Image (cartoon, rainbow, N blue to C red; front, side):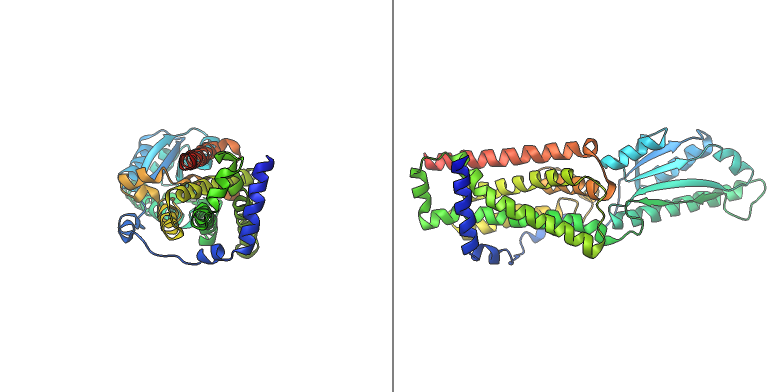
Length: 371
């Protein structure tokens, strides 16, 4: 442990003296424009839908079919209670829930108004607004058809819609974008800074001196990671606090769970940076590889801006190896929904596996270079 702390203190002192590492983070080159062509898609499709049908009638089944046959919604679950679709929304398994009350068909036949509820997950303001528009359009069309079939020809539409947007009722884009910005800034700063650290040792010849020291590669990797981990964690927490003060970002969940998510995510990003530093032979090459491995994947393939469900299946498959995909889901669930560990444990396990894998691979590659 003393050796790890010694390496960490040495790296921290170097960061404090060398401003080049901080300045280089200001440059954002553009790569792989072709990736934008595949991933840039603002259309919202394959909206996962759960249905709570308390009527179980022909009219209710026709209403559900209207949603499914519209081409926008995918029916993924049928629930029998409010608690079930609440749990599905908290886990991110569905984007919307259609709640059909008991007595729907009877009221329609007599021309009475029927309140049909659409529960929409509002952690993504743009998607929520689109889902609301689709739902209103489908229900208004169905209402007009039932009004023509009604024996009493009621002047008012027999089906009334009462949409409710959870977690972001005002559909503010800032509430949706800020969690993604935390993931984006954390990944970029952590990967680039650590990617340059070991390469800098190579260029200056100090890595050969470290090889002769009584220290193993894993201890060296942990020591290199410690100062960058502390800086990245503090930076991410400051972004969260600033977002709460300036943009009204809520904090409905546990701070401990938020810190755990941030720690796992940043450890994976730092491990990726160290892995890159063992491959590259110069800081220029390390910087370019770091951007390719972190900048565009985090921006395009994490669900930060563009819905993953609207992307081609090949691109969606690639997104499973992007850690920001899991972190953004967990962060939005904790901050916006107040989700507990039971709702985000899968994302945390994925982040832990990614962090362990990156740190282990970095240690193995460094040990081979020292051999």
